[in-house]
Length: 338
Image (tube, rainbow, N blue to C red; front, side):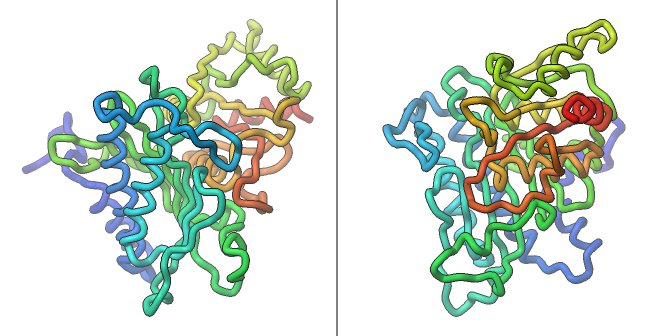
């Protein structure tokens, strides 16, 4: 069937797209696309569970806390287990780390140890505290190449603590009015929508570009009294006639807030506060993948002092401030911070 102008790319699945992208890298093997297919499988399962959350009785607290002292939601644990199982059966994942795991987890190794080339880090269900009120939530993931020379049997994290510019791929899935997957392998940012009728992610847009400038800012201004002075000055400027003024848009789910910023432009801010002086978002599996996507789409991501993807993590759950968005908006913010 030939595509019409109203339905371009309708029948290009994410698996086909990944294989086509792989052709640009002669040294690539099918193992990487096989790994990504494990993530898309997990996304379809999590999407189904999110949509039936009330029916399945998986809403609310699990009664346990994670390593950060945060109350775990039932769906947090379900999503984490789903991703862990889907990646474990790929056969080429050496190690995983997530927000819900206290320590990195080594996937069982044996005769095929050499085939286990990849490390996957992820936030299984970002924004899960909002799910009870039907707000969009999501999954964030990042993939690194395993480096056996860094291996330390006594400290599995030694292989994981790589700066963001070493990422092979990163992406997120938004579970909202539709289920959308966005990913990059360093060759642009591509977006897919899950078609429930066929159970496949179909190509929506290729090579997405973030607008150079937006008209919205996204931040939890309830904490503004303890933001750095430069951030406070920037937010005051956003409300002036010179600025437009900007409109405030804050969802409280990183995936949903960034997805809007990616498509519409603007800026997302999660500054340090008196309560969280080092920031609150996790560098390895939240800020790094978001920064990779932003830069690939023509945007910028910093911690207020340096590029996010140049930061070398010192621990798996290290936190960081995050400022990410359109180039012009980020440059304006930087002038207020200096």
